[in-house]
Amino acid sequence: MTDMWQGPDAVDQLRREAAKLKKINAALMSRVERSMDQQLNAFSLFETAIALDHKVRDRTHQLREALHSVERANEGLYRAKQQAEAASSLKSSVLISVTHDLLQPLNAARLTLSALTEMMESQEAGLLIDQADRSLLMLEDLLRSLLEIAKLDAGALKPDVRAIALAPLFQQLRNEFEPVAARQGLSLRIRTSPRAVRSDAMMLRRILQNLLANAIRYTRSGGVVMGCRLKGDHICIQVSDTGPGIAQAQQQAIFREFQRGEATATDQAGFGLGLSIVRRFATVLGHEVRLSSQVGRGSTFTLELEPADLTEVSDEVHEVKLAERHYSGLEGAKILLIENDPNGSEAMAALLEGWGCDVATTRSAADALLRLSELGGAPDAVIADLHLDHGESGLSAIADVRRHLTLDTPAMIITADYSEKAAKEASLHGLEVLKKPIKPAEMRALLSFLLS
Image 1 (cartoon, rainbow, N blue to C red):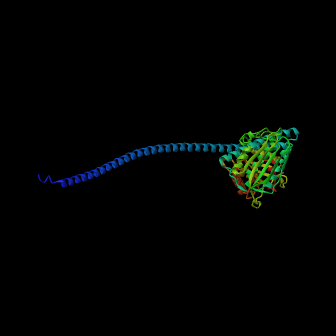
Image 2 (tube, helix red, strand yellow):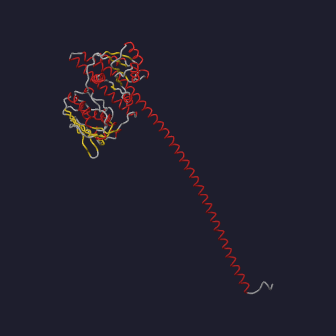
């Protein structure tokens, strides 16, 4: 008992130790509480991470579904695009084929009319024949235009851009359109130019032909002027007329197919394809076409081209009008004709016989060789259609005839095939080509030239 009551010092020491233990306990409790808070925070973060993961999974699923929908839509669009391209290709192929077939009877009709013209002497008959010939010319223009549009749509017409001198081109167009303008009582001025431009020769010629034909067709009085000028870095070819003009609201519509105006009394309305071809060709070549027009005061079409150096112009022989070549009579000339179209063959034979030729008509190379054996002599010239029956080519038929005769007999190809491939094939064989419908004067000039 005496140890328990040891005095004030011992009590103070116990108090100090008790206070120390309280501090230690408080520190321990604080550490435990902080530890619990951290655990609670970690748990909260864990729950948040789980929630975010679920959201990410949901969004990923939604995104995946959206991508699948886009893929399915793209597949549908791709199939639709393929079907549209196939339909367009089929349409163009059919149009090219049909146009080629239609040119055959048209050629026969024009040749028959030419033969008939030489037989008829009365003025009345001549007027009727001329009217029929003009109708056939309009049909030919329509078929050519449809063929060009089909080739563009099918991608079969590729531009061959090179330096082109304007002077010879303008001269050819003057020779071609002066008689047309004179027949309608119009003046035609084509101002020559020493410049050169970069373009495709065939397409540029066709553009200018269509612009001139269109201007003459719709001009009732006055005339048409074509010329060119330098504007900045470009050369502008302009075709101006004194026609009725075109309202502002119609100035874009006339470049669409089958949009046409009212023609003159001396000319029939066109088919509304000329300016469509102008716009299509110009787009392919990268040329700009502009129209400036006022109702009652006429129109001006401007074609903007890139200039070229005249020294870059090819030295190739430019187109020469066959009528300008020297040629003699055809009386007594022996002609071997290889033509699978009966009407075309009959019409061609009638025309040649009207010129005094002796014509042997055949349908194939085998038929031609058999006929040569029967005749026992060599022809003075061979005229063959490019596409014969059963896939046979007029080029091979001419080669077979030459081998049979062991002679390089003068020959020419006639065809309704306007493709670049056909022209190149004939050129590789060194043969002249006449496109159907055949112009009799051109045929006679070329035949006389070959026989000379």
